[in-house]
Image 1 (cartoon, rainbow, N blue to C red):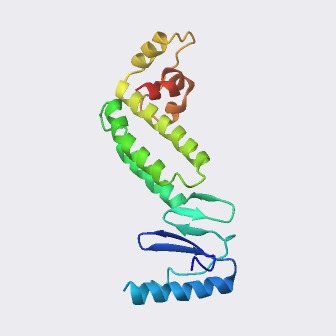
Image 2: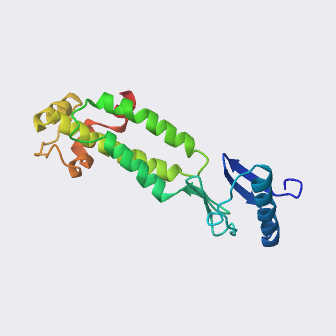
Image 3: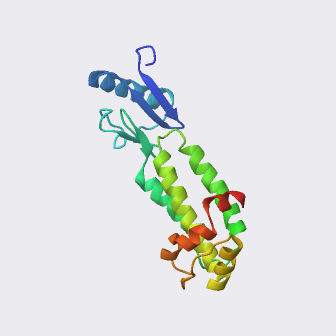
Length: 189
């Protein structure tokens, strides 16, 4: 098939074949089915096998691939966020460093797997969401607003202190929480 100019992407038992025309794609599908079933003794799932135009996009191994884009499937992103939520439970009682040590391999694996997708915007949104989540965990661990105020004074904050609920998601995005735990603070941990 490569001799005919078709491009093939294969990962384990998943295959994508890119052709220039619909007729070429139909011929390639028939030929690939023959090779897989007769030579390799694999069964081809007809419900998953289909021919699509590149403008429609194709879902392949968690990535949507189109003619001018590739992105992470929303379902995969929400599943991953669910994993992160389980690790960063606010009532877990674990120190923040331990939570970050558990997060690092997950984040590294996810970003390495999806690095071929054009997902800079999704990764930035995920990082912002995760920082807010970690701020929420730290606020919960501090328990009392006086600890937050002490941290703010150490950093040189001279504004007025308002009462802040230490276990709410809303206050994890407050200016006080962002000032006491800036983005660089997470990098230094």
